[in-house]
Image 1 (cartoon, rainbow over the protein chains, first blue to last red):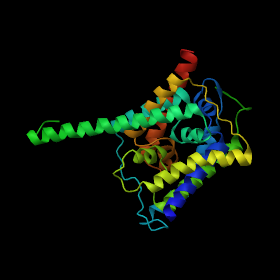
Image 2: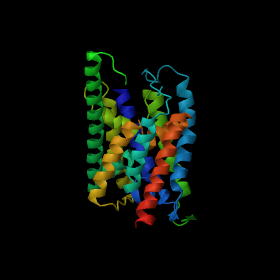
Image 3: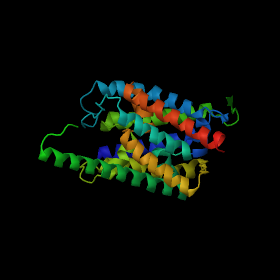
Image 4: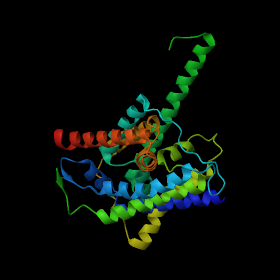
Length: 153
Length: 143
C-alpha cells in the first residue's frame, strides 16, 4: 500500500515538473528540437535539473539491495549497445520530432483534457501492443525451429 | 542557430527539471523502480505481471496532476499543433520505438544518464539527434 502511494506521489511530482518546466507542451519541445529555427534551449535546462538530482539518488540506490520500503532494488543490468537500442531510439526520435510528444508529456496533456493527446496515447499503446505481438510471434517461430532441430541462426 | 530569448525559460525549466529528478529519486529510493514512463505503461499491457498496482498509481499521478495544477496555478500552456493523422503516425512510432529501444526521455534521458549508463547516453543521443533531423526535414527541407 505504501509503495502504491509513493508511486502515485512520484507520478504526480513528475507531472508537476513537466508542467512547470513547460515540457508538457509539444510546441515548446519542438522549439528545442528545431536547432535551425528560433531555438529554445529550455529542454536542456530540464535535463540539467533532473540529472543533478537523479545523479545522487541513483548513486545512493546503487549501494542498496532493497529500497527504503523494502522492495528489491531493480536497476537495469543490460549494458549492450546493440542494433535494437539504436533502431528503437531512432524510431522514437522520429515520432517525437513529428509532433513533440513523448510518453510522459502525452499522459499529462491527456490529464489536462487534450483530445489530441488521447489520440496520441491510443496510437502509442497500439504501437506497444504491436511490439509485443511481433516479439511473441518471433519467439514462437524460434520455438518451433528449435523443436525441429538446430538451425544456423 | 539563433536562440529565441523570449521563449527561453531557463529558471522555470530548471526548477521543473529538479522536480522531475525528485520524482525519479522517490520512485527509485522508496520503490526500487526506475521512472521510465514508456516501460511503466508497457507493463500495464502485460496483465500476467503481478506488479500492476504501482504502475497504475504512477500513471494516475501523471494524469491527476494537471487538474491540481489548473486549480492552483491556472491553465497550463499545452499547445499541440500536429493534426490527427500525424498524431497517430507519431504515436505508433513512439510506442514501437520506445519498446525496441527499452526507454524514452524519462528512462534513458533522465534516469539512465543519472546512472551514467553508456547504453542510455547512446539512446538519448540517438533520439535527440533523430528528433532534430525530423524537425529539420519537416520544417525547413519540406516545409
